[in-house]
Length: 77
Length: 383
Ligand code: FES
Ligand SMILES: [Fe+2]
Image (tube, rainbow over the protein chains, first blue to last red):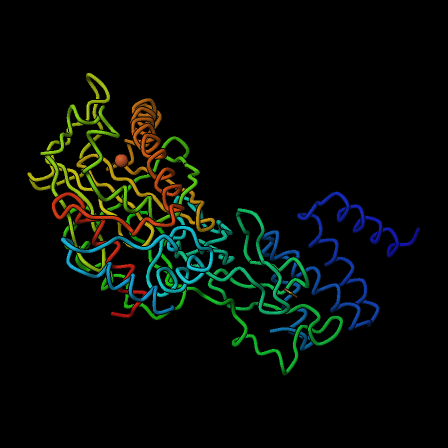
């Protein structure tokens, strides 16, 4: 199993289990992977998911990082 | 409002000696109830909840008040705000159940996120996947719809149409009359100082019954031992509130222990107590050692929930050592309010008597009730 599908599995499990605290970092991980591959749209999609779930979970560090990346790409403010 | 109804309301606005009470439709007609939401509630200050519902930062309490979805939120600065509980995007209900929010109010539909002050924080994918911006989505114009609110004696008041005078102006006379109580912290002990009664009557009957003392010797014979009819006086402030006072308050819940008194009260309150209906839907009581507030939450023209919350003078009174005494006090009040249920429900049934003309007031004993009826009639006629 490659890194992407493994991450997808973990995300699905977290969604199913209602493990909202795990979601921000899982999406952040996905976003970084895509960003490293130069896929800006996909990365920003995942940064957005990370940002929103982090706000919801009160995970300030993840929210801050995701938002900064989105701002850098002109996708949020 | 038709001519006949106008005439019946002008009969209510006569001097107390000749006035009649409100016509039956004000108790039995769902359409009048709909009109009341606008005329008697939305255009003034009504109680929609209590501060004790949202004790911690981030607490959010969704309520349905007069059929309106409202959301009460305690922000990070402890500031309490009330919003319409609806997302500015496609109108989804934002919060379904009482909860403690972490750092955002997130709409469960497309996850637009709002700050606790109502401002719109982010709009995920609104400009396409991975793009949270779009020129047409102006966040500064899309904050939550705030409802004007004001905290008073542990209650959260709202002015739904946003056009009433400021609360302090609206309640100026009561603020003056009770200046010794209103500007100090009140302490709520939680569960044991809180109860609800579900009554099958129009909300106005609860107001009417609460503000008069005429019924005490008949409906509350137990009270009579220390609260006789002749020890009561009327409180009448036309257009604002009415009720009764007692000069013989002397609570004896326990042989040795007492609740602490509020600091620095004048002598009047050594044995004084006052009970007023602040129009439209609040029933208040003040004593030297505790206050209570009852919110009337109309469910329909003939169903009302009475929410009762009791407050004490100091933090210590809310601790575990005083729990049994608080329970006794709550039980005492609950028993009294339960004694009133057959009367308010009985008056509701009576209002189906088609030839009943709204009734007669005693110019001595019924002045507070008359004052309330007159307020209703004046708001409906604009006089
Ligand atoms: S309805 Fe709330 S985000 Fe769409
Ligand atoms: Fe009573």
